[in-house]
Length: 197
Image 1 (cartoon, rainbow, N blue to C red):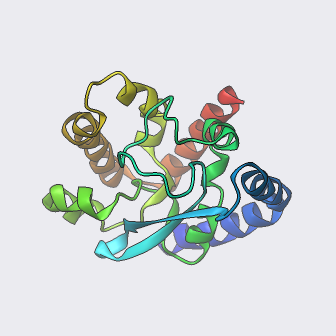
Image 2: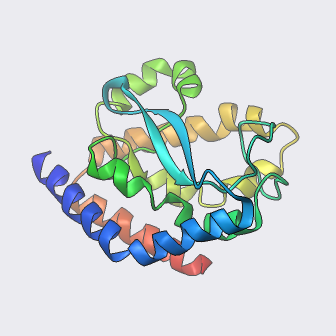
């Protein structure tokens, strides 16, 4: 939708401009707490299976191995990283991904290539739209890290239980998407963030 893309451009520009003081403070916090790099880049799969680098403020220690899935209480998460994750401020750099057309404000969250390969047929439908900063699944699974921490094998739990449910919600969004629904998802996302602060 052309209108949706225009809204994405305008709102992402406004967000980057108005939140620039927060972006600077967050960047300084990451640097002061654990050095560089300040941004975390990870390959994700976007519209029509095009891969791109998603941007986040780095919340974990540099060059520390471990599982690909992060759970609550993960020792790799830095002190500043805990605050950024709790308030979702680590996601702010993704407004740049939106501005340049790799993402949308609202849409199914982009996944890593290995998970997309596991569910390739389902992603044939889902990746007909741009992935988003937030979606229905982001709200429903707002405590995903705590949920995964309860299982003995978090990665297996994610692939077998959590991700299929996220894909169901992505399908639901694509079937019912509208500007009204996008506004509702943005509003609910804001409420979730404010409750965490």
